[in-house]
Structure formats: C-alpha cells, structure tokens
Amino acid sequence: MRPITVIGIVLILLGIVGFAIKSITYTKDTTKLDVGPLEVTASEKRTVDIPDIAAGAAVVAGVVLVFAGRSAGKRG
Image (cartoon, rainbow, N blue to C red; front, side, top):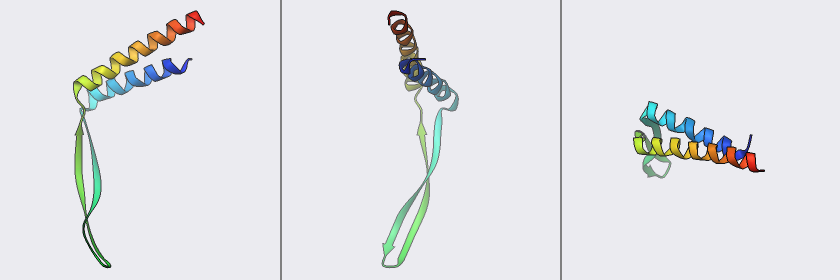
C-alpha cells in the first residue's frame, strides 16, 4: 500500500472520529504562584471543540488522497 493511500485512510478515520466525538477535554497543570520554595499549582480543565467543517475537510482530503494513491499505483 502506498504511503499516500495510508495517509488518506488515516485522514478519513480522523474525520469520522471528529464527527463522532465533537470535542476533546484535557487537564493542564499551571503554576499560579512561585515564591522561593513555595509553589502553588492548579489544574485547569480545557475543552477543544472539533468543528464539523474540519472533520468534513479531513474526510474529503482523505478520499482525494486514497484515489490519488490508487491512480498513481495504476500508472507506475
């Protein structure tokens, strides 16, 4: 299987996951106060939304790459 086809398949799968999940939540530790040996940290919960247009663009780009990999394989 050609690398361009593999990349296309990965993009298609990521686009489908983007449609299904809608957002990714993660926790980030940040330093709020740092005075000498004393350090105060806080955990912040952050959410990143995945726009439908980005998921759709990933699927479309993946399909294009899969077909480009197929046609390049037939020529070469």
